[in-house]
Length: 212
Ligand SMILES: Nc1ncnc2c1ncn2[C@@H]1O[C@H](COP(=O)(O)OP(=O)(O)OP(=O)(O)O)[C@@H](O)[C@H]1O
Ligand SMILES: Nc1ccn([C@@H]2O[C@H](COP(=O)(O)O)[C@@H](O)[C@H]2O)c(=O)n1
Ligand SMILES: [Mg+2]
Image (cartoon, rainbow, N blue to C red):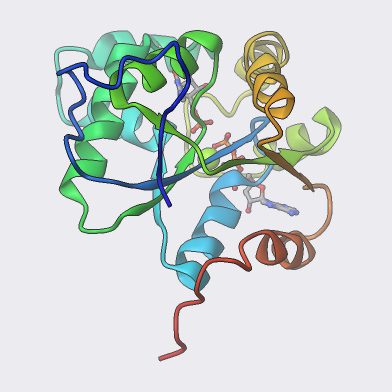
């Protein structure tokens, strides 16, 4: 069950834990741009009753809401850069608090060391595990250029920037969790259904949602 952080670097008595007493199970879903995180999260929601929180989707919603941070976020996304942690963590915390669920897939977060350390410090939550979608850049590029969802960052210039940020900033986060034995790696180059078969076996300890 939702693992309140026990690492010494985290002050568990700090009063800034906005989640308060709410105990949650968190799975971080990481992988390169276009590796299929959102696609598989939708399957996990349907089969295992998690709530899907995509950091990118929350940031895009923040732009649309007319927030004072909107222009800054829009510019960062266009450049493939990572938005300051305090902005993204506030959005994630708000979404977790507003939800009745206690099981969350946090997709596309933490994207860098700053994201990771700030989330632990503020929420005191450690992920149950990290689901890591492993896919070649060639395949990810093909998928992004065919996605057709009107995203500002699905153009070849921004895609290349996002790949660079992924390699330089996000892979080290995966390596950090791997060194703690918390990474479950999936071959994400397979077709969607085959990827989900592998995902299902990782989630087998969670109860399946009953068919309606
Ligand atoms: N296993 C797969 N095989 C082929 N196409 C896939 C696969 N998984 C997802 N796709 C397609 O690739 C595109 C990107 O998938 P998705 O949006 O799930 O990726 P993502 O990891 O969430 O990307 P981003 O980080 O940019 O949000 C979508 O058009 C999706 O339909
Ligand atoms: N933790 C994060 C997550 C995302 N971003 C920004 O959003 C862009 C799109 O993210 P997707 O997961 O939907 O691909 C990403 O390239 C970043 O600009 C972020 O800053 N921090
Ligand atoms: Mg996505």
